[in-house]
Amino acid sequence: MFQGRLHQAGHFVLGIDSSEVLAVSGKTGVGVPELFREVIKRIPPPPGKLDAPLRALIFDSKFDDYQGVVIYIRVIDGLLTVGQKIRLMAGATEHEVISLGRFRPREVACDELGVGQVGYVTANIKRLSDVRIGDTITDARKPATEALPGYKEPSQVVYCGLFPATHNQFEDLRTALQKLSLNDASFTFEPESSDALGFGFRCGFLGMLHMEIIQQRLERESNLFLVQTAPNVTYEIVTRQGETSYIANPTRIPDSGDIEEFREPVARVNFLVPAENIGAIMQMCEDRRGIYLKTEYITPVRAILSYEIPLAEMIYDLYDKLKSATRGYGTMDYEVIGYKAADLVRLDILVAGEKVDALSIVVHRDFAYRRGQRLVKKLKGEIDRHQFEVAIQAAIGSKIIARETIAALRKNVTAKCYGGDITRKRKLLEKQKEGKKRMKQVGNVEISQEAFLSVLDDSDE
Image (cartoon, rainbow, N blue to C red):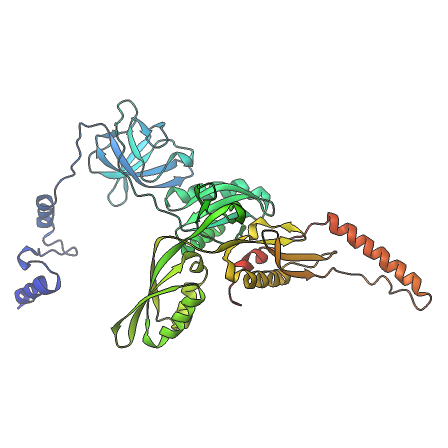
């Protein structure tokens, strides 16, 4: 009876021949020696050559406060030993191996790693930038001629700026970002400066979830207080001179007069939703400039909706709105299919006549007026009142399309004037007006983190 069940499971459930199934118990140890013999017999050995020049693939790394950078490798060719002089082929830096170890599964120290073995290496590497996931380690004295193929470079989809809330944390932020990038090859960063926020970094992520994870880790593990700018995608721009460039920072987008064609990334999105929610999902996609492709019913009550949607319209809250519309029963997956031309413009925000580069965003021209009105209205509620009047404006190029004004804090200078000549009150008011005018010329407007986060909130749209 047991053999019959095994035979049935082997052929119809597991898809394997029951005669090849081994009776093994990890609890009692029954059949373990036979299992090892079959592994040696059936699985081919590593194809590398022991007498070839050393080539080892870096697949992960971590930072240790005492040992520096610890590299996780798999040896493809050659032999790696303690005391050997090695070279990291990507950066052409040389180091001496301090210690080696294997995973069994815990880290166990050893003197050498051969072909096919996986382990860790410490080589007194102090600079985090020297190590790159997918790089090749070779012998410094007898180097290999070709590096290993490594990994396909992941392409970042979402970008945002991360700035320290206090300027004295800039170096701490740099160190924390370098440590995170050690074992996350899909995360990139580069320094940038902002007139409003000072010095920070432009960071690239695989998506919104990846961005939120990185930000949370920075704040919790490194005790950093960060200011995050609005996330955006990479745009492809063709200038009138015929040059094509990819720009991830809205502030670097040239003036509209210099742009021949403005292209944005487009994704093909598949929604798996209950049939009763199809109308709500279609309306949601239409509001985001989606192009309908097809509808497939997999059951009478479940359907797959396919749309092409600009990636910039997805990264904010599409998934949250999907869960709300379907009461948690809807799912989605997407694939970026390329760039398409669109009528896009850069929307700038001016506070007290000065452009705040960290608040600049890219929007479709048809939605620019509504988006500008909504942004200046929200910023008016987030920016504190000052001793002088503050104008908040939304502009496309030199054209102002929306404006809100924050009234100045005023003191009742005529409170002590009881009755008497009106000219005394007028003189006091005129004196106050002149003081407000001078203060407006030299005063600075403080913008809180909540004001920058208001750019992300599309709840009123």
